[in-house]
Image (cartoon, rainbow, N blue to C red; front, side, top):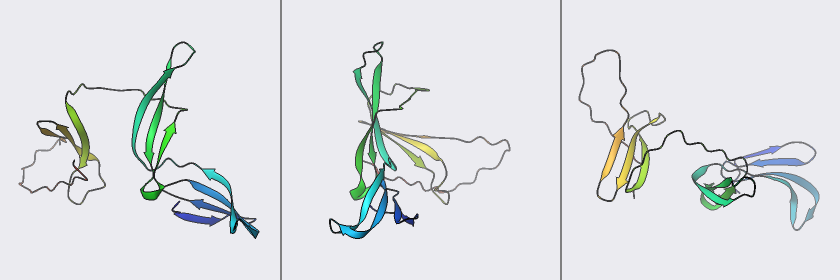
Length: 159
């Protein structure tokens, strides 16, 4: 695991934290065991960063015929990346849905320029025969003259 922080706690204990994998609590040993002066005491599961996920329905349970679901996440990055199965505590409620037939892919995009940390303002929809780009339009209360500008837009990846 690639560590992002190492903190000495006390009594020979180290906390090794990672932004891309699990964190660990290690004990520093006075005498080496298995060619190491460190012994792992705890392993703290880190799901982040979640690169992608999918909600998968499972078999019906025996109580009332209610079905359960699990989330499969693609977590971590590079050599620390893993697939994780999350089964407990899942509560997903749809707030809205739209039937879009024939869609093959969808991406959100930020507006180009200096504000790359802002909200996504475009939604790219990929179909077999076409690609649609939908945008968010902000309405202003004041009337202003429109100036022509060349806006650059940035897209992380297109397949």
